Length: 158
Image (cartoon, rainbow, N blue to C red; front, side, top):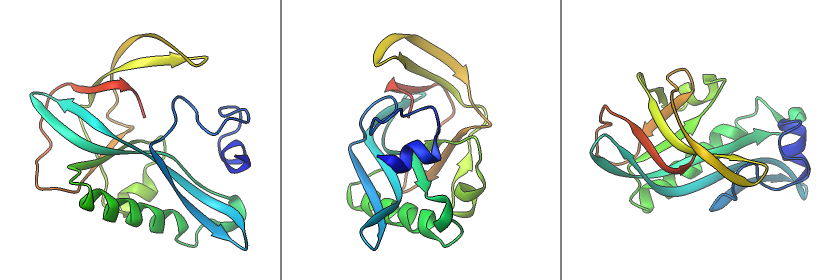
């Protein structure tokens, strides 16, 4: 997918995924051209003693010429609608720039001690544990409260 290569140079290298295939993608099109996309990873994670159903938002991007038109926000809104229908507890993401997500109701978790399977060159290499408070963000979708404790991704990091 050319859009992923444009928005995340050096990461996708012509693949349609970075670490793992998302369960589905939301696509924004204009005149038969893909101008935006958001991957969704639907799975369970464990936070402290609590098991949670999550939509992990991954690879959210919009072509540069089409940014600042609400496209990413519309995809996040659609993902939230789908999450509610799927009985999801939280939308979760890892972001180095959180501004867009803060505008759409996400918040940082601090502390955010995570545990996940590291993937490199399309292979699992080791378990990692690290606190990610400046990157880990959540948005409640159901009625559960986010618990404090280790965030076990029960697999790879989004």
